[in-house]
Length: 119
Figure 1 (cartoon, rainbow, N blue to C red):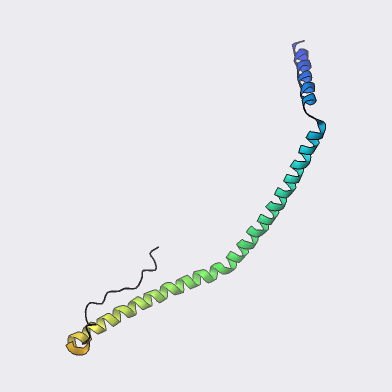
Figure 2: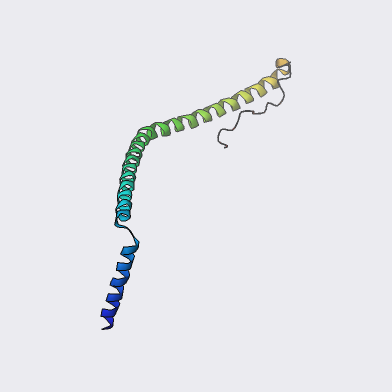
């Protein structure tokens, strides 16, 4: 008995809600939702394609980038070694021949190169 009265009350509330909303408005909302859904699906497909393409490009470039990074680090080590050797050779020449650098370039030469590893 109580369930039946609850069911009747529910049905009455549903009928009242249906009278508040026009059927054409609901159809219009459904159409708009379907249109938005289609656009979102298209956007999702485009973004998925872009992500796949980006992943492929990164895979192609990644090995070259790693190799070139190792090469640059090796070159930096070589240049640092050359700089140290030149500084020590200059110090030895200056010790042996004090007038070898008369223009004042014999002063302590500071390494003025920028540190590329610092941000």
